[in-house]
Image (cartoon, rainbow, N blue to C red; front, top):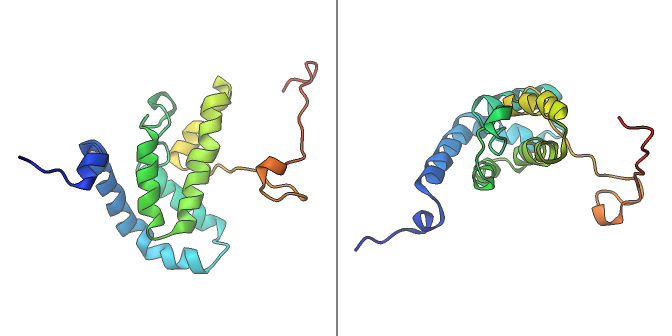
Length: 159
């Protein structure tokens, strides 16, 4: 009788292979810069841009984005595995990775027009653009439940 280990019970072989690929990327690319990122906040924009280009060139920036927009069309599990491996050495880089590749890209994918998807997703997937999430307000910070801003649809002013 073959006994499976915990990882084999939780993940498919493809997911385990991907995790190993992510782990190797982290060792080669992120580990050497992790201390600089974590101790020298804010990290310079040029460094973020270089990091995101590397993430994009390895295919990590478009994990959940469909192939028609330059991504690999993987499930959230792959995004989580990449995030876990990155956060093992740099929580700050995980946040940047997640903000650009998930918090920014997925709303565009789900709610954007075809024109917006074409314009923004491909550069995000390649790491040529860095996505962001804007949720802070002066009176509530990032407490999204307490936000005071409202939007009113005006049929005469569609943009």
